[in-house]
Length: 339
Image (cartoon, rainbow, N blue to C red; front, top):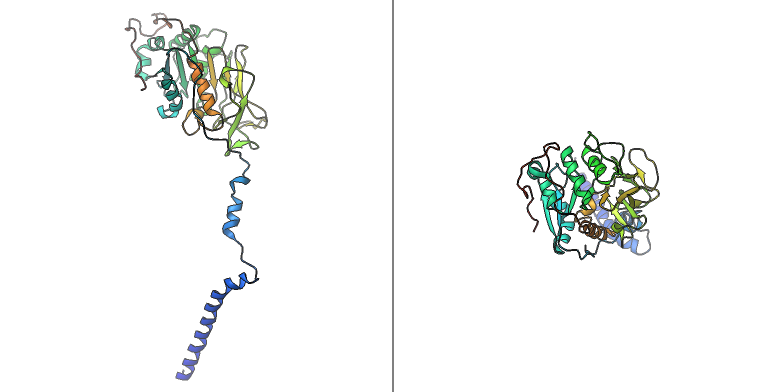
């Protein structure tokens, strides 16, 4: 190729490149002068994910957990002896509220339960069970029955994953059933309350996602005083069959059970004179305790736990016929105080 042709090609290339660069620089001003602007993709994305357009309606996250009760100092025993799927931090709002109001909180450890379960209950006024994964023995169920008969308060709190286990069903039978239990450690068909084993969900009215269902009071119970609406993040439906037990909280009418897809309002909390059963444990955790009216529910639960007047000396030491550990020193098996 000649030098002249080479230079000519170079000039043509340079001119073309210059026109491209000039066009790119001028284009934005041309759009401002009346041309059609390109689509605002950033704004479109923002509109598509605008929180105001979501179906979910988050409730307010504010307030403090308070108690109305002026009861004398009581001792609340929290069970961590039965492979409970719960940590101390998971129930911290409840513990902090009880301690701030002059009550004592202790934890029942595995060693305490094996050594002298009844002795631990004798020093308590209320017993809290959250997500147990190990069955209670017949001796322990008998001790807890005596504890409740003497006026002790019992709170049973279970998520769907663990609510169907024999441990929590056994406890419910002893605590709220009017009948006696047989040799099956409390697992009879005569339940006052039973927990469902699958979760509830609501595609029409929910908190942030459809698995977080709203629940509202049913009737008048001490557990729901001052409550308009609570949020349960993983709710188990409860079945109530005893006249002494009243539904306390129910889900919305368009709630479904995950396993059968059946629609309807479902009981998610129930109460008798001495027992509370709640089909969700997450509402006790710090990240959930202040959603909607959850803090009111936590405070009401604390009031319930200290509202009893348990007879002294119950449950009595276990006898050889009932099993247990006869001859154990009184007071053995108490858990350390939560400061």
